[in-house]
Image (cartoon, rainbow, N blue to C red; front, side, top):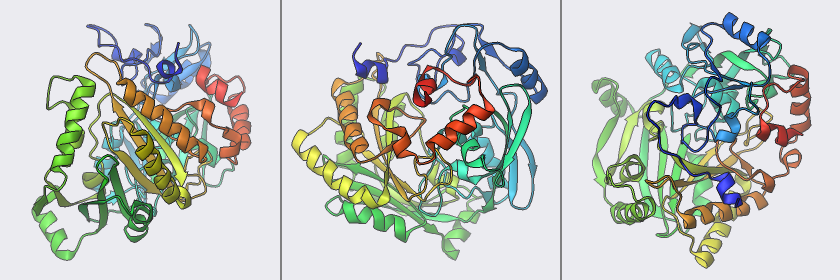
Length: 460
């Protein structure tokens, strides 16, 4: 089998009556055979199940990661559905404790209702579970914050022997526990630090990519939150920069019942570029519905306008649709040089792309296995959507393979919850605390009950 087929598997159509929990969200992998799923209703039931079951254990979460991160290793293993263990447990003035399987959208709704937010920007998709977001290093954008795992102050887990343990900032293993790839235990509750939630105004613009090498870092240094989409074929960048709203903007937002405010001036400067992108996407995906989810992800860039709202209303705007998503983290200090390399490579090879390159930066993370560990970081994101028949455009796949090789050669660290070719990376070199994490794993799960074939290969 070609390596591309292994890394980017074909999507299979949904089957009538099928238990969707048995497949990952993209529908390109089967996670377990029928009858392998257990759904404990309480932490005590979970403890008993872990203590008495035989074989390996994996958690479903929202199933948004590649199948290889979630699938069982062997027949007789257990796949855990923890959807009954959700919700807000308690709050203090500056913390909130949630059950581990709580969807991020529920976390954000509870915090927003209290005028609070996490000290980290959200990812664009909020249907992930809190524990899953911690485990895979989910992040947003802005150099004044890092991944969501860094907002955790305490984590409670059911360990491989069925016992319960809690870890906090004072525990030497905490940097491993809060971003543990699902390998250290079953997270049942997470205490998160919270801060007062400002109102932001997000300023949107389309600019030439001629000076992107310099502009990218400037946008992130000059504004607390920034995100951009780079269209190399058109030499354009669509950039969002957010600042705290002025008094008048806040008043208008409050007068709109706290709903996102779209400002009065719109720009059509990207409309022609978006129409060209949509044409290519339709040719690549053969999706009949011209208003289908993949197309809506770029249509929103037409007639764009500045907006005012809280951090979740502004940035948590993703449209979940099956795709292959590759995202590689590069030290911010090297990002400008890498932009230049991609420009030169793009000019020489003219790769086929049907979605812009997504650029998001964060500050350094304290979590040992975070792609942003120890340094300001720029995440380069690439997307290819599935076609109507479940296939992937061959040129799009070739582009993903080639661009990942470029970023890996620069010392890039891939996002754990997305697609990557593990053969391109020397993990102990990329992660200074790799061996320390291995030692924590051996201490908490010496029989590797939380492993699957993929994670076993990573660490063995």
